[in-house]
Image (cartoon, rainbow, N blue to C red; front, side):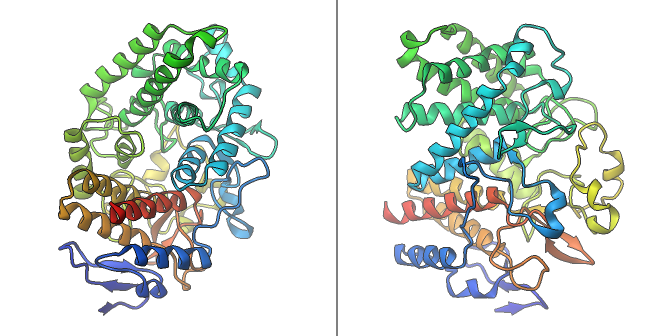
Length: 447
């Protein structure tokens, strides 16, 4: 075993680089090969330490992170549509169906309350190029009201995630949409048709520079496919049915655009928009399963070869959010604001190779390799599944960081030359993805 001053590094027997373990108590549970009993013991330990504890609002929605005191400035007490879908999905596949249903039902109530956002754009009564006129994807979860703050609400991926999971749960009989709910679902294809989502410049997963993003288009395609599947069964019960041909046409346009862009994220010529590698593309593999096996392998290799670091995985090359000494460079009120109009000032703070390394991706990579193992029974995939699960476990915080131990960070960033968890810790999206990785490992060992 190799030690440095604060973090623990242990050899990984799969031929990968050393694992960095931030909390040494996890060394008793991390294995190069797991048994079902090992995973059960690990589950029990993580639950005991509160690593997988979520504190939803009374209506079942989740704030982005549990922040308090000095980290309240982040604004992560707000509810993001995208984060809630990943969290609800993780609970659903982990057998906590009631938690998922309560969350998705409250999200539906939110969209019902603000359906005018769809209606005004569909009717051509408002300028959809202004992101504040679009459906708001970040809001006050306690009262389901919009937040009166400029934000990058042009996020087709966030809307797509909601439609995708709601339709998935409806198809599986977990939710039973009323007529008023179906009426909301039918607004989505009309909305995306009006804005031309396949050519729409949105701010996407990272809420930054608007561009034509494959990761956003892919989420919409996945959502439309499930909407069509749902309506194929329940079409006759819709008061104002949308044409299935229209939905298929929208799917085809999205597919065509994906074929042009992938495996890149964006191919627009402007250097502020062009992006060859982006970890958001992983979500097109899991949980959406919207790309071919060949394309999935390419995306996976791109991320591992170009974005992976020792402490996590970068969102993209040149990402200046939580770059080195971020808290020294920016005042609290400037760290988590809407940067979608101009990233130049923040980007000027970044030095090459000093992007924050995020913790939401390693669990997803573990799941992807796990599903490949379950399909093929090739040992190499189980080894990679194990490696990326262990990387995820290694990212759980230790005690010497100023935030607390046994927490799942949003990311690790450089502070005075040492990797530290960023202030939005614990991030519930990270916890949710870790739940998915653990459940998938459990399934791999049972099959």
